[in-house]
Image 1 (cartoon, rainbow, N blue to C red):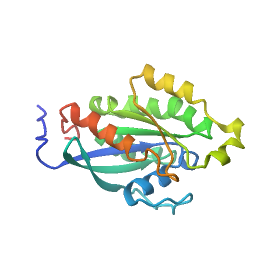
Image 2 (image 1 turned 90 degrees about the vertical axis):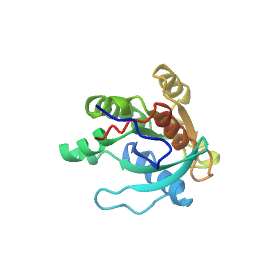
Image 3 (image 1 turned 120 degrees about the horizontal axis):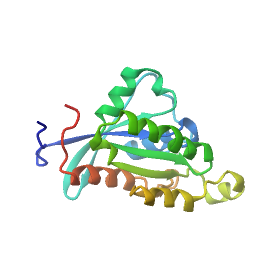
Length: 194
């Protein structure tokens, strides 16, 4: 029988950020969220790496252990099981300039989450449209824009919160993480990794 975690104690939530590698800007988002710095081309990490940041949600400090996941990570079942079965929630990130990044969330990542995740974490999803460009830049590439009305409709149909962010302009960067932590916390967080 699983025990409910006492929320008065330190909470550590394992969050997995999922996206299609460079086309959705996961590394830039993570660097801005954890360090407050923006880099359009952050250095690649070798091996499995995660970041930690403590945030305050509804007057409670919650430590987030954040694992970036990309298309190259699903190469072994050990890695996949570690991330999916140990996760408490997922941040689904796509790039506003890449229809491919959104299509991969629907056609690959959502299938992986449904197949390999625990029942608790499947309920804790947040969809993020990442735009690291200035308005002048993305207006010159209209063919690459993902229709945000379609993505919002999809998120609404699944009861998934949706956020548009811009790490370069420091717009809405913290909100998806706070919302995801709140979803986990409000479900009377069960330590689902044991």
